Image 1 (cartoon, one colour):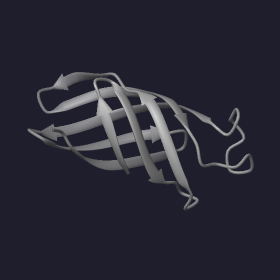
Image 2: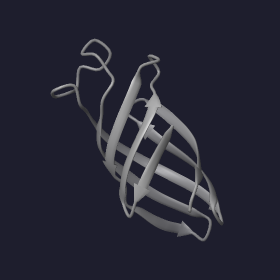
Image 3: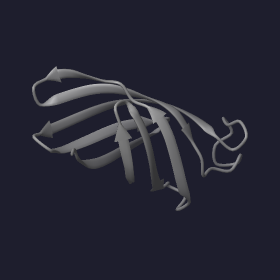
Image 4: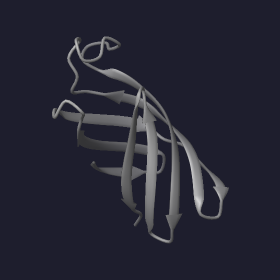
Length: 95
């Protein structure tokens, strides 16, 4: 997963579980839970799935409504997100 974040907006790409390139555009508000953890909700859309792989889509875009948990220390972090029925884990470098 590679992408950029500006304020609460994100754009990134990844290889999905069907080895197809997916692109995501999302709004991702996060709130401090502890000094080293944030909880959030990623809301947006993802491409890269056929109707057979994911029937919930409009014009090739699947809605994203994914709760997130980020653990961080200074500029490094680890995030997990629940996308429909798949847990996604990622490392984060915060600049």
